[in-house]
Figure: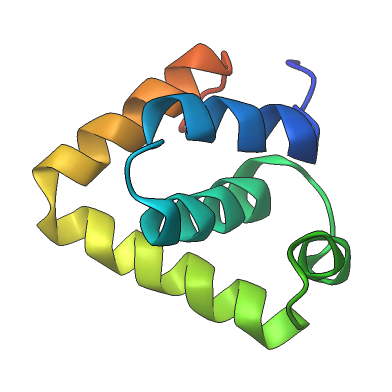
Length: 88
């Protein structure tokens, strides 16, 4: 079993790949933290200064955006790969 990355590791890696779009970067960081960090919505929300529902909404919106945006899907796959995570 692979160890889950911490929030800071996910945030750093996402910033390397998505440095040119701050608004998108933040949403993707929230999505990846929600999906892969193993942290609670509350902990993720505290880190980003938003509520539990804000984490859920941001994560859901990115998940929907990925379905229609091949470039974004590829960028997120690159981040996941750099973090040595499995999408399964």
